[in-house]
Image 1 (cartoon, rainbow, N blue to C red):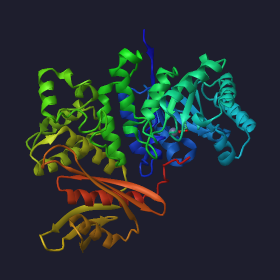
Image 2 (image 1 turned 90 degrees about the vertical axis):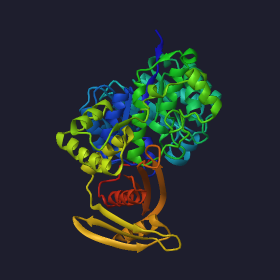
Image 3 (image 1 turned 30 degrees about the horizontal axis):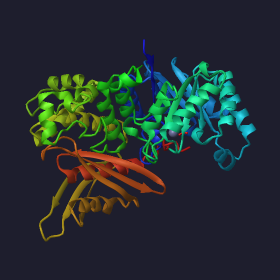
Image 4 (image 1 turned 135 degrees about the horizontal axis):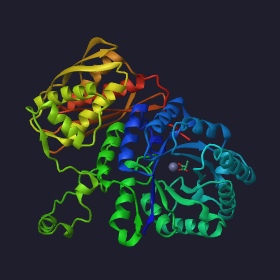
Length: 513
Ligand code: KIV
Ligand code: ZN
């Protein structure tokens, strides 16, 4: 029997540390359910001590998720660990993940602690965590830049205290594959009780090597858990991308010889959901989940694929959950057909009222767009879930906009502010600029627009545009996403969604370490 490789997803914790990617509790729950459908072994749901919002999100996920282990991060101190344990109390399949920095640089400059103090704290924290669960993970932060003798001493001690997973963090993405693989191997060889723990890799992508480093940790080092995020989401250049690890290990089973429990057909739906919720658009040429990942443009390739698929395809699009842009529904489709399609797409709306609301949006869209694709339906559902759970302080009502060659574009936007309709009327350099100016003329948010991007949800000029807007105000960064066949209207919706997030008094979830 092949050995198992455990997939530990940290989209909701390390992924969320990416500025602008912070998620509400409901968004986290939605993603956690999708991760469970994907059958990841462990879901790191957050960092309980970082905020009340994160604590509540972990608590809710721990109460709902049954098939994956639910984990909370905790610094190596009793207060953080107690908070993690409280958040996870409702789960009978939980893990506490505690960490402390072990590199000379971090110990001296950041922690201002001696190695002996760090050693003691690591040890006593694992001991304390074991009071709540026998599933405890320990990470030496900045492990790849730590002194190997010191690492061996710490890791032996935490395993002796009951740590069941040891995770070697390449916190700043400094590692290179061969050396990182060797590091894991040496640690496993030198730590006398290393066989009592599962060894894990956790890599950041600063030099673009997170996936390569993780695979080297597995193949050279013998690690049997990989920590990763959907779409490689994460601060700076991101974390190891789950879809790349899973498909590399699956496609090259001849080389890795490992089994995983992942349902790969849930990869693309997970990628789309994370991108939709966070507003972090996936680049078209991204492996596995990019829009072009399975597109063959050159004549030679197309000819080859038509004759025998495996001439140029090493994976099948449908195996990772790409629907083949099927026209599924249209203007005349009824509620039952819509509901059935939702079921086929694996979307479980909470109540009949949610289905009705999504169906109304679907009919609206079908009036504007003759052909409705799976991607359109997923975007409707996503919008619906966001609208149902988010307090909409501002709400988009309508837009009229005029632009003519040689004339300065003008936009009139009607929207409501706490239920009261207002109309903003402004010029701008282009139609989008005029539209955002019109909204700002009534809101005066003081926010700075730091990112604006448009993405087509499906192919062709009939496609809905998905606009992402990122705003920054007083150090707080938020994203807003809006979809509509009219990209100027999508821009207005995205801007309003971002303003709602800025307005929200909910404690910021983004747990910066
Ligand atoms: O990158 C890192 O060091 C981490 C640890 C908390 C595992 O995310
Ligand atoms: Zn990390």
